[in-house]
Length: 219
Figure 1 (tube, rainbow, N blue to C red):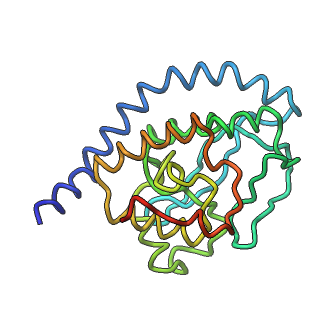
Figure 2: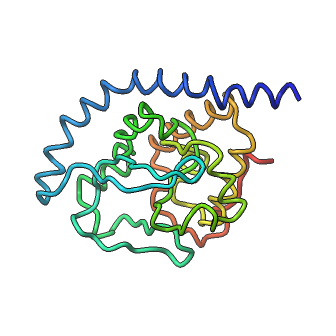
């Protein structure tokens, strides 16, 4: 009972303080990255610097999530057989600078703005496109459970799998996180994210590969 109260206090109070403090610390870094990347992204094909899409957030509320644009303007939406986003090192839709940003996860840094606005957390489930759903009431219980916490810049899936898990496995992982939110888990995810980014783990992996769905952390 005490552990549940502590977990709830962290999720609804201390986690927000944690987010804001780290977002403010990271803001100068984002500004520096913006100054460098913005003109390169624009000069690539004279398109917008940011990719702003409506995402499904906390309790099914939609919000605009900010990212640096990594694809060419008006690129088609290509999906894997399970409905997950197609990722490939040779994807012709991705620009040269976009490929670099994806490998280093620099395309995600504008989401620090989302954290300060209160629509995202540093750690949480991936925010899915709102256009992929037909309303909160149409979601399955598991899909609703993953929306009981704020979406994150990084999360369990991004840290341990990146693009290597199937859509079904990603939902299971998000539910696991929602059921076990804690400061310790968030710290583990943040350090694992740094490791995954530095060694470029699971950036372009076939999600149909069954060995990629094994979750050691849940043992």
